Length: 89
Ligand code: SF4
Image (cartoon, rainbow, N blue to C red; front, side, top):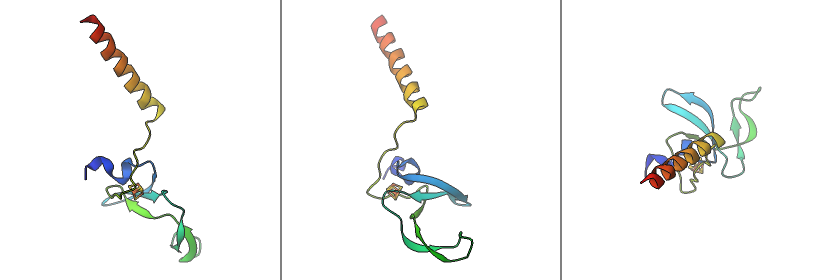
């Protein structure tokens, strides 16, 4: 699989932290599942938790993250520039 189709580029992924091996985040593709959390005030309390994945992992439900407004405007400006160049020819 291309590196483009990995969690860090997926619209369902939200970065929550980092490790020595890279960034980690929560997959929000589905509802959270019952699990244990050691980040709660009382260690190992039962919570509904989002699956945690590394930024380089992937699954078959990958979906491209929409462009931010800034990136969309950059692409639009580039298209307009190319169109202007094409018309000059
Ligand atoms: S596990 Fe799949 S759906 Fe969830 S963030 Fe990663 S690629 Fe996206």
